[in-house]
Length: 80
Image (cartoon, rainbow, N blue to C red):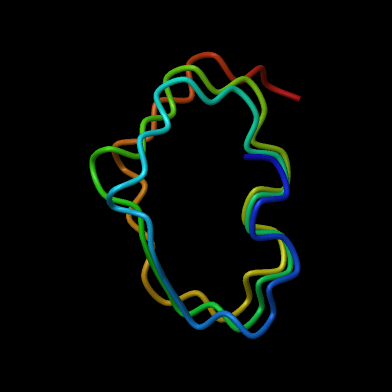
């Protein structure tokens, strides 16, 4: 899923509640420079347990108003 929505600057809202990400390991730059994105719904199926790289995942999301990531599991993402 690396770069999946990268530079989608006209994207305003995104609902990913139905995404099953349990086998995803790379989310690098997933929402990079989505500067028009205001509302991002991830939901409980957005599983980050297998993710090993989240570098710059939300970099440049300067207008993001709604983001719930308290259920993110980053135990496999190394500290840099």
